[in-house]
Image (cartoon, rainbow, N blue to C red; front, side, top):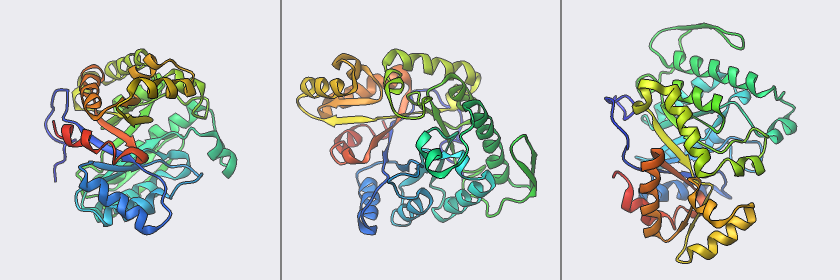
Length: 321
């Protein structure tokens, strides 16, 4: 079954689609209602992070969300590679893709949050080793989702004549998402991923001052340049995803931007220019997203769960355009 990622090459800008990043629920009914409401409001995807803190486990929660919806895509943003052997993840993902009738997106990351490693005792190798391991894992995922038995002999993983059953519904496997804020990760994403997330740089292991500083418009210009250079001729095959960390739908844009920017140590103008924040009325946000897509190709826009209902008029105005 062809998907939008296997379709013929197309030029940017792509049509808008929207995701909701959700991670918590106090009950089954609360979680399923979130998924059903996201679908009803026109969102394309429900995505989840992958950390050991206060959040639901992504495989079980995404399976549940898929089971109570018909068209809503589900995905990880992103599975931390160090927490699962890629053969295990390949089987889990293929099963979820099969049971959702081909509605899965698989985000893969090298692992970054220091607390996850501290809490669990999992060794946090230096970034270069974690990225090397992630690159091998992506090769393993794609190999096991292919038609034939797969073997691989890498520095970190060895796979021997594994058939990789069940096979996913989506031909070649679910689209792979890789996001980041460093040159190496974004260059890797540009070469290997179907969807590239332009993110803040969280190399210090937490969402702190370094990450906030890398959210600026100028920093994003540089990141997109890395993606273009590494992607080469395949750039037009890539969907660019931008996660909104801060979204406020308000008629008092300036006051809110001053307050929010101050809490983050940046002036209101810098905050408003960042592709990772949206502040303003629904009409203002529609115009701003069109301008951002023109500048950064960010057609896949994901907002936090606490604002997805207030943001729905923007989705209604832009989804598919």
